[in-house]
Length: 364
Image (tube, rainbow, N blue to C red; front, top):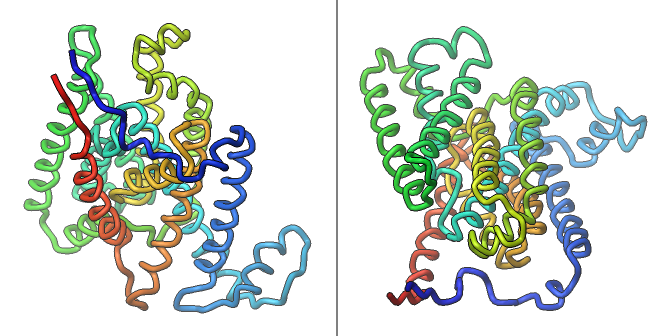
């Protein structure tokens, strides 16, 4: 018999007064705080860049379609906001939402604080799809080829890993994790081989930039592709949050409460993969967001997925928008890669989790 000590990564109550509040009250307080942060970070992000625009002018541009004249602004400022910075902000917020909710779902489903969307090969599949689009020249033929290829690759990798885990008719979570590691390594090797065989430096540069992750040159077309899929997947995960709470208690307990364990596990994995695939398709590989944000939200708000999933969505949006603002301005007029900056934050946090998890006691 295996006895495991309490899940020490479930945080001890540090905000006890907040946690005694009902779910609706906690959602209201948390959402209000994080939405305020989204608005503040968004306004700052829209105002900064090669063309600096006062925050008041940004607010005026955003409010003008509603017939509200907050302040005067120039035509150039309006075009910069509406055609360049606003699409990037919408795509960035959508990517943060996707990675946040997918990470929260994976951590709850695997009952592991070190799980993230890349654990079942989604990011690697998206990377392979994008590299194929670039190396074959499809990305140069029409704008949406790269995100479409990346999305298909991400979803295909997720289904392949799940199919391996369900071989023989019996699903195994341990097999899923090991298959994810193997598929990640295999797809990474294919990407490396393609990079080595690329015929020209321009394609190589484009591949490396995409693999490093970023939101440069994102347009309203990218937003229209990714945002509906991400918001739909987020809503589905929120609707399944109660069942995810029950799955965290164990399969037997979940079945006794009326949860169809096999079907619900598939739905959760597929929906998380859909959100992540849509994010990878428009932003490239952005590591560690799905690891860091849900864990921070869990430390602050507790493990109830009815609260954790929507708060991880908003927290992911705040994080991506803030880091992307730094990426755009830290070495202006050049641009730092977003995926590199998130790795600078996420890698030390991952090491911290590894060290902290050593305190868990397992006895056979």
